[in-house]
Length: 506
Image (tube, rainbow, N blue to C red; front, top):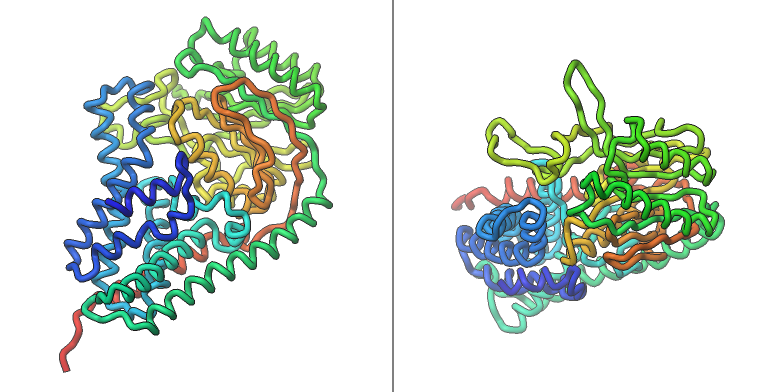
């Protein structure tokens, strides 16, 4: 339980990120000397506590917008937490089951944890929300290594240091690990490994920051404006409120235009109507963009008819003055039960939280939008938490990452801050400026080194402009992807196969 609470405290709201480096020590101490089944239960308990306290916004969202009462939404949070808890439970069970030499326990633990995080990020559509490495999004020197390893390198580092700290503590109190006393040499070597990993990562970060600063200084820096409309989610799709919603966005955009931006960005579904249909609202928006003589990136739904069937998309349109809605990105990774119902035939009784349209269809991965000789890589809503999606856009040579989202679903919970913290890593991994426009916040600008250049407050009307440096080089992570995570997965599989065999008697 202690590990679960410490893990949660390392993330927003509390953001006591230093706790991440010791959060697993109580769990490791609890499973020492335990059998596999008992260790699994203790790891599961730690996971339940962690995810139930990290994700309470799920209850708010399902209750407020899914119209589910507490007696249903709380158990559903419990089910989600129980599923996610399987991964730390598996980590705990493998730690006591595998015959890992104590001198190699720290890096082995890092590999096991990272492999399980990688599985969580990819199995069953994936849910990589607040992987352990994300807890360090404020520590600029440390997170620069993400341009090689992705966020998974930070998770490996944190767990390695946790295990080293545990072995040192276990040596001090004179306890055994798997009936083997912890020697001073073992504890010292483990701590040395942890310090070398930490020191190497921060030294690389300091060197890389100097390089990136020089690249930023020499890079072109067009000005981009983000508009935060702060539209009430409960009224957003009300036809009677559509005029007022567009009025607000146009009024805020006029304010943004006074800074002479090269691009104006509106949030996800900022226009709660279908721009492909001729209407007064569509004509107003097209005329405004034409008069402004500035491209607008606008979040809006889209539909098309195919064989007598209508397909819906959650989209972003790049409006070029005089060209209308001819450039579009369709969201690729849809939100289960929010934008579509998985296994609908087996779950016919389960509805969606977005009742205004039918099930959304997924778009094409890696799509980029041409913008005045440059390329925009757009990610909608929680697509930004999936490293692979951003990387595939970068492979297509996007110059700027743009994340449009509607975090009004989360209210004033910790979720908007958690969501924003993960976006930092997409900028660092790919060395691209990330522009973020959110309906109710947090909107902002993140530099290619992960530095937050500007951000808005929650639930405020805002129009903010910022010069954005455009880098063009590709990082190791962009070129080769999650090689580090795959290496950890292979190492974990090898340890499981070799370490899980019964010891042969001589």
